[in-house]
Image (tube, rainbow, N blue to C red; front, side):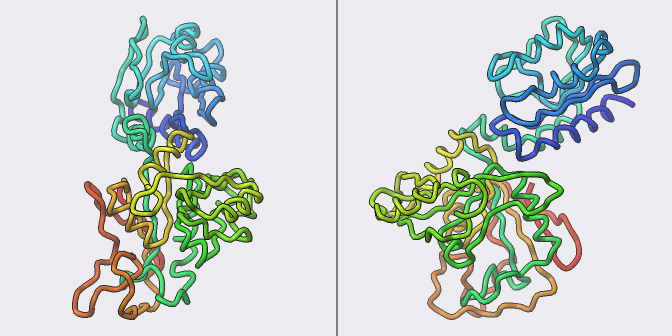
Length: 364
């Protein structure tokens, strides 16, 4: 096997940490000696050993004179754990093959032969959220919506609860599992009463932070998302002047009520994203509803957009006149075509990643 093939295995190892490592990146490492893998490692969680250290431990004495493959360059600074470069030197690694450079300070090699750029694009895509987090101090925001073939995300009277099939809903749960936080507006809480949990047993225990944008604290204390999982994994963002009694009732459930700066009387979404990033949220999945989606798109805060399109569902038809055009749930006037997907943000292109009754469209 050559560098390209070994790096492929390294990237697969790194992906095992999806949704678990923030604010650290996903990293896999592989020790190769005499053409055979003798040790591999995965960074499982922030504060736990890095992938390089795990791989060196697995390789033991066979690491001396071997090559180490890692998708992101080894760290040279001391954080929660010691620098990985020191461990490489101590183990006697002869050569390091790196997928891509870390946006943090670079490794100087210190006597180790370093090859950089093997499957670099794949390595960067794997940790795209980490790269944005480091560069901007904001999480990578993925907007997810389900819609019918005629471009609706809900019926005007709320009668249509599910408009996707099992395959698309399972993909939605996988997206949740890979995110640090799930964002919804209070309208979605009042209308759908979601749990915002990951319900795919094969993914193991995952509990992304549940974030509700609720400027006036209308979330009822009996909402289902307040009853599932750890209460501390739910955050409700409001503005100054929100009813104090409602804040006390929600806090009594163990959730955090976060006062945020206001913009036009509503929670300033950019300020909220900055605060979430400060708390270690690197990737954010925005699930709904239409008002929240429109606000995120108008503010230029969406990095990726995904649409679950349902093929075998009847068309929901035209919504009654008078619905606010701002909402993505509304219908354009008769005679004007409506696009099948929300207007994509800058630099976004959609690609089809699925087949059958429920397909999933996600931008890179």
